[in-house]
Image (cartoon, rainbow, N blue to C red):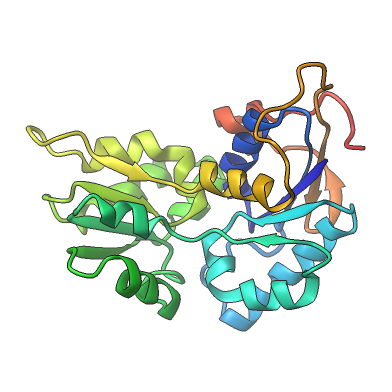
Length: 262
């Protein structure tokens, strides 16, 4: 079994680590775009062109399923990706977890890139799943890029700026960019108000990993005698290794390859 994941940068690490936890025997193909990231400031047409190129690089390794582990690409490019690859290669998008967040009653804040914040796609999710719930859209310029480069001062500054825009009474924060899951604890610390119930954070890594396995009819538990799966890393189409920035995060260290993907 081979599972591919794509993103503009290392935001695919949480979903990849979730797949590894569920199926340590799965071969993983990680395809991202250091030559073109960040995608957030690009036009929708440019994002789609970059996403298709990154997906093509992953598809060349014949995966069973491709996870689009990027909210920005999912918002702008899922129709084009599905038109290009399905039904031969199932495509799993990453949707901001507005539905489960709103189910708690709110108030809810959605932290996302400027490209996702205010998008028709996100607004439609809010309309469909958060009717009657107070939802605040919080743009987080620079945060995804800072996380990708493991730039701690820039991460802290971007989180602090977004926290200022987040109402003090929110009970739930939707992490609307996969990069943000890598610094979830720091976001919680910045938003949590003294004396209030613990803040609930909603990411997507576990959900998309489980959905990918369901889509290809794979069990969420590996056979006991299964060998550990391999890892291929594609950097704007070039085969490489996990960069030092990825290894700053626990999710990246958990994915270091022990053998090439088969």
